[in-house]
Image (cartoon, rainbow, N blue to C red):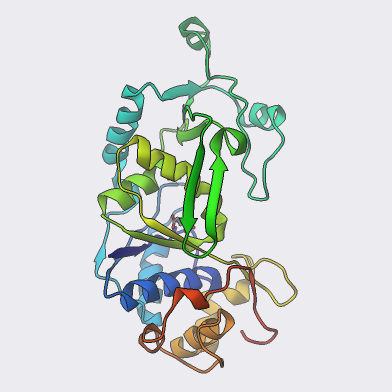
Length: 301
Ligand code: GLU
């Protein structure tokens, strides 16, 4: 089996993505699989090479090694273009000229993750109507009104009707950058990734990705969506919580202390004692990982 860790180099690692990297690593190592690292630097505005370098150093410091590195997404446009062309050949792609404000005015925001249900305003424009537009278009895929079902390794059975939750979604942005939804499918499938472990903020993207796997004739991996880590007062941890950044954590704790405390918080060990990833791999079992958000006990970090 092959797993991967796919961080975006937009900042220093923090407890949330240390947790994701640890669980992805534990699952792979406990099955004797292959671990890949992929830098998801699709967004040229937010990604920095220096953060990617720091990510590699931080993972090494934590003791989370990998067997190979996939090419960073910023170098993969020709691959994404080839898959975009396949969707186009199937008549699934159309240009969308809506502005951000038109999109927001036309639909009520859906769900807590801010996903917006697309109204379909540009779905059936005639060639003349398209020619009259001046804005540079984004590119959407036409989704059918079908249910996409899968079993998540942590969250259990899931079913989503794309036409009700997001509608036709963007696979290439108006600035020419291919969207995460398409890129992640191409990268995981072509990298022969069989297992994807990531935060539950991406659970709602999974049905879109599974549908793309199907349309592109690619083999989908097994998904595991991890619960969110919450501060002791129940707030969601974010990169803004400076003291959760690895820069600050490294000044206060050893790697074994960070790993051991995280493992305690998510039920992988009974006490917050220092541990290496290897120690935890010996007894790792997905059944121990909680489905619900994890509140970090006061004073644990
Ligand atoms: N690059 C995404 C992130 O850092 C993860 C995407 C994925 O694992 O599919 O949040």
